[in-house]
Image 1 (cartoon, rainbow, N blue to C red):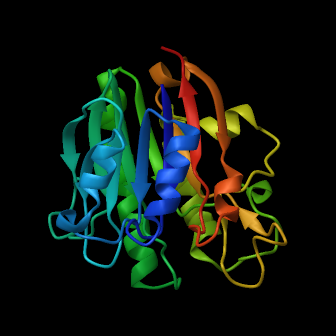
Image 2 (image 1 turned 90 degrees about the horizontal axis):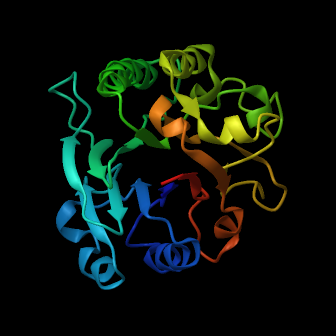
Image 3 (image 1 turned 135 degrees about the horizontal axis):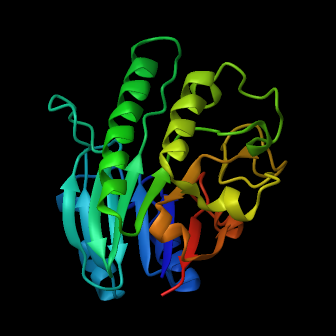
Length: 256
């Protein structure tokens, strides 16, 4: 099973690019973030015609996550538990082919310090609680998404870049490490331990052309999923397409 995560940065604006990538990469499951649309305006009909089942948790103009799958998916959880006042559409969880898959979009957290960074850390604490509950199930689970965390210095083109950004603050990295310490495996890191792999290049300052990127899109695997990991990578070419997202699709392949 090939499971991918892709911050599409607006599904309707980038639908041609999404369809091109889906056809070329042939994932079994594609977790999308920043779909930036309400459920009713997500292009379900077009994607269904292309052979995809769609689960959508949208929000007008911002955020929003979706799960596309070749076989039908059973929705398990819509929205991250732990805060009934949180109305941001950032988490969707489903069972697909015997694997529990979550599409998640963590808060950016900038500017920091401040309320947005506080929300980011609180959201990550809630994710930690949900992740622990999922591990307790004992089956294969994949937490796939835009984590808005640069885990290591070698996950960014320049160790000094974005020094004050919320994505690489010690608190953000510590929260990510706590997930790993629960027993999750970072799919990309486990197969590419020396770093130097990017999943995001800003639209500004020629970042793509200069390869000034960093890694913030991750697939975390439960032990039962990690035991089945055979490959993982990033579809860099998608970032170079016309009117592309600023993220590249990131994926892992699990043995059947």
